[in-house]
Figure 1 (tube, one colour):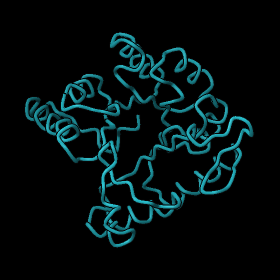
Figure 2 (cartoon, rainbow, N blue to C red):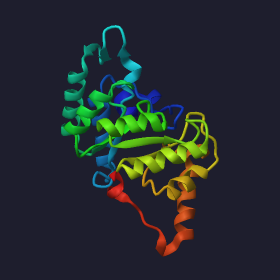
Figure 3 (cartoon, rainbow, N blue to C red):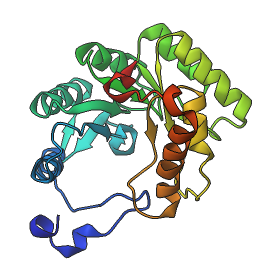
Length: 232
């Protein structure tokens, strides 16, 4: 990052990751994959992209402002298909379209049937929205936030419903995360297989990964690492 963008690009964002001034998704992926390859981990690392398309969607025009140009739904889908084809290590896309575009999310789920299509803004850990997504075939994974719907009981109901209908559950931290590591225990308890908790910088993120190692030690031979099987 420092070589490509300058030393300022090594500053971390609020979720613990780097925030370089890349001008396109392709540029960001190229820098990332080059770094991973040079480090010797190309066969061990896969990528999940949080597209967060709602944040650059224009309600008035019904289009997305992407890299200086406007794109409609189909162009967004085709652009993401091309990106995944160019970087096959991309295994998940979160909120690839506007948060209320269940029809479009259904279409991209079909188009990228080997990719995890995760609903965060789409589902908001809300069982009614997950039910709507399941009915339409929109997405195949739910981003699960413990405090998003209002109570842990309601959030657990969402996870159970998702798993019952073959949707993966991706446990997620929240912005402003603390050092509390209970999210790691909940991830294992839900048999989720994957957690979204930011880069390993700072105690607020590192505590989650440290707790996973403690849980693995506690479980001993009973511990099962999902690995590449996490998509389902």
